[in-house]
Length: 264
Image 1 (spheres, rainbow, N blue to C red):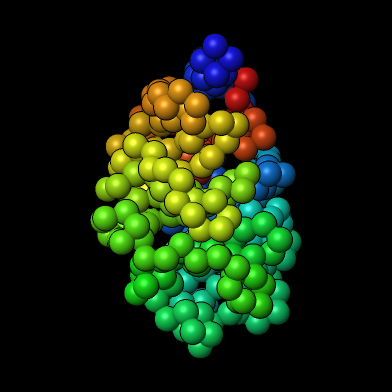
Image 2 (cartoon, one colour; image 1 turned 45 degrees about the horizontal axis):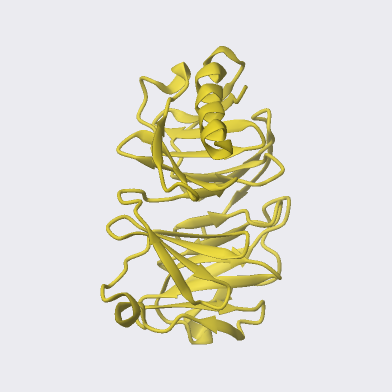
């Protein structure tokens, strides 16, 4: 009952937020993310910008020497990770979006076909190695901590992840065809969640939030029920490609920019 009430309250808050005050960050953004302090990181071409909870830009940096950015991970607030799949390079940034230390060249360090990355606890990283079809967890010096083994042998199918995120000591691997694969910190497979069609996911408060075919959805990790949620009126006419909820704010990536609305 508690989870049903939480889902109902969340749906109501989305509807009610249409009456609240929001803002739009104008631009043709390629991707974005948020951190647990309410900051928003938005990539437009090779320009990465950092915004506060009111939509004011507080930092900007050009990453034109880094290669096309395919992932921003703000697992550690104000210390985001960026990753270029094409270059096989990742870097950690500071609160001014400047690169900390030197970018990490994964092929030169023996990781020749990493296609997805995310941050993990204790300054470690998760890699998906497309050649080995395995998940690797490594420390800050790229020393191995965990290895899932070949996922095609483990699952009986070949995964093609589009997104990975760690939450509460579990790794969630998003594959639009298969669903969301869940692993523990040792790389041991736990289960597959029936969430097909999502390119990215966000894990929050016992649920997974995702956008599928322009509809915002909530998957309850306890009841396994999928519930469609209602967009605020501010974006009802727009095509929403990605959405995140952070500190009472719903952020939505659209063709016109990133629309941010208060949840009430």
